[in-house]
Image (tube, rainbow, N blue to C red; front, side, top):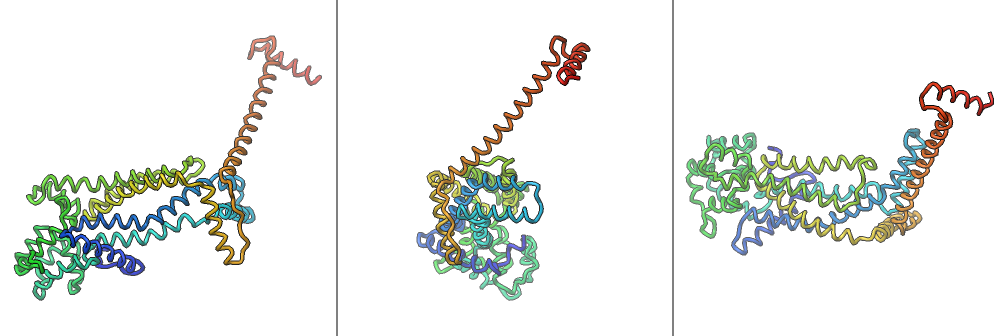
Length: 430
């Protein structure tokens, strides 16, 4: 996973990650005023802040999903109307009618995707910050800078340093850049710090302004529930199985439980989210089956990935999913009280303001979405009843004809067949 360890994010993610880094730094400063410097605690606080900041987007996305479920019968009616018609004129008419439905409800074909598109770069930048906190939180970075200041010239070419770099798959990095040195130091285990201090004894005695041993302070910041959050669950379990005295059974259990909890909490939060939306059958909406599969496979994938990512990432996923569950319960309660017609009215009013700026006439407000849905359902029920009546009539005609021709003879017998021919001729005067 070398691509995740490039100090700071660049490109479009750079500014976003920098803003998130400021939030993380503010949290470290806040907790330090109470004498607490713990990365695990700050990750949890950071998760709470991010959930609150992204709540408006979450609400917008789920309102859009609820509205989409109401629109589905009309969209499906259009699809049925043009089913099998692949000529250009039919496709154009279908697109126009589909667009008209979206406009009637004050939304657009891309309306539901917009919140997701906004959230995606934020989520990617957020993982970069979680993966390499010292690069974004200067309060944490200072501790590593104190260590680097005591390292002699040419330390990066020493056997112990190159060996540590290879162990963490960072051997190809340029260690004339001190940011890259911090990337490596952030990943060291207690035993690896001891190995480095044995070769460079000056770092073992480095203290901060408060007289605290810096290496001990770094290890203390990275400890959460007895486990160093810079470690990966896979490495912790590997050390435990090999009989390492550094890893206790409690540490091994925590390393095992974090990926499992990550998957379980993510699965439950997505289940709560889907329960907030009107249910559509797989036949009516083929994408529903795909979404159900995704809701199972994605949590499983997070479990697999979590074993190879630092425990800090896993801790973030668990905290995020647990908060998502709490948040989703509140969102579901809110959505239950949302009047769909009022939502449509608000959407259409917003859309009309945009249309006005473009010099277009306003779209009429659909004030009775529920009635529209009932009307479509009634039409479908009427068609179904007509088909059933026709089928019953056909069955009655067949039965009447069979009974007539089998009269006075055993059904299926030679006499019945002869009788059938005779009566057929009588009926048709042959």
